[in-house]
Amino acid sequence: MKLKLVLASALLAIGLSASAQTVIKFSHVVAVDTPKGQAALFFAKKAGELTKGKVKVEVYANSALYKDKEEMEALQIGSVQMLAPSLAKFGPLGVKEFEAFDLPFIFDDTADLHKITQGPVGAGLLAKLDARGIHGLAFWDNGFKAFSANTPLKTPADFKGKKFRIQSSKVLEEEIRSVGGIPQVMAFSEVYQALQTGVVDGTENPISNFYTQKMHEVQKHLSITNHGYLGYAVIVNKKFWDGLPADIRGELEQAMKEATVYANQIAQEENDKALDGVKKSGKTTVYVPTKEERLALKKAMAPVHTKMADRVGKDTLQQIYKATG
Ligand code: LMR
Figure 1 (cartoon, rainbow, N blue to C red):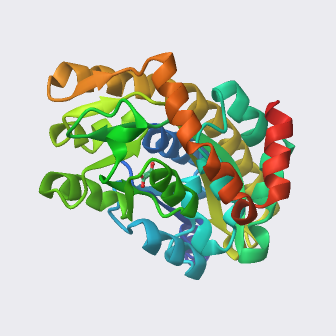
Figure 2: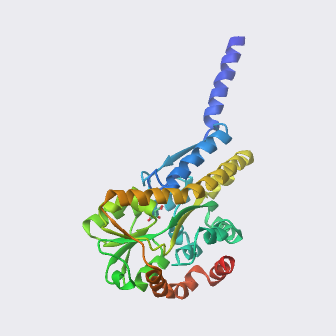
Figure 3: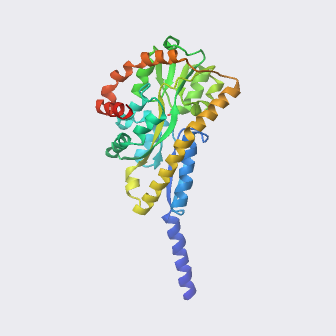
C-alpha cells in the first residue's frame, strides 16, 4: 500500500513537472551568427536558467519555421509565441509608427538611436502593440545599413533605374524612389536568389545580414552609406504572455533585460566582423563614401521625411526629432 502511494506520488510529480514546462517558440529569419541570432540564443539560455527549467525557449533561425509575413500571422494566431521582426515589418499589424525608424538619416549614430529605443518614446511605441494582441518586450539593435549592387553606388545618380530589394515598409519604398530607384518588397529568405538571378539589382542591409546570407557572393559593390537604421522589437503573443504565472513572467522579463544588454553590446562587433569577412572574401569592393557624397545622398533623401510624416505620425516624428536633438 505504502509503495503504491510512493509510486503514485512519483508519477504525479513527473506528470506535473512535464506539464508545468512552458515552451516558447521563438522564430526569426536571420542566420545564427548575427546580432539577433546570438541574442535569441542568449535569451533562451537565460530564460531556462532563471525559470529553473520551467520555461524552454526553442529558437528557430533562418526562416526555418516562417518567412517574414507568415511569422507575424503565426504570432497572432499563437503558432509561435515570440518573434523579433525588424521595425520595418510592423505595417501589416497596423502600427505604422514603427516605420519612423526607416526614415533615412534620422539617427546620427547609435547613441542618438538609443535615446529613442531605450527611452520613453520607444516605450510608448511598444505600448501601441497591446491593442493588436501583441506585447512588446524590448528593442534589439542590429545597425546602420549599407547599399549594394553590381555597379558602384557613390552618388544619387548611381541608383537611377535600378531595382532594389527592400523590407515591407512604405518609408523604404519612398527612400528608394527618392534617388530614382525601383523598390521591390521581398521576404528576407528570398534575397540571395533574387540578387543572383538578377530579379533585383541591389539591396540594403546592415553588413551582418549581408555577409551571413552570402550576398557578397552575388554583389560586386558595397557602399558603407550608413543611411538608415535596421533593428528589432522583441514581441510576444499577448494572450500567451498574460496567461503566464506572474513569477515566471518576471523571470522572463529579467532574462529579456539581460539579453537586450547583450544584443546591444554585440551588434557593432558582429557587423565589424562581417565587414572583415566581406573584405577578406575579395568578391565585393567595399567603398566608403566621402563626406560630400554622403551629404548628397542625405539631401536627395530628405524629402522622404515630409512625404511620410502622415504615415509614421507627425507626433511620433516630432518626439523623435526632439529627443535626438
Ligand atoms: C530584412 O528583411 O532584410 C531584415 O529585416 C532581416 C532581419 O531580420 O534582420
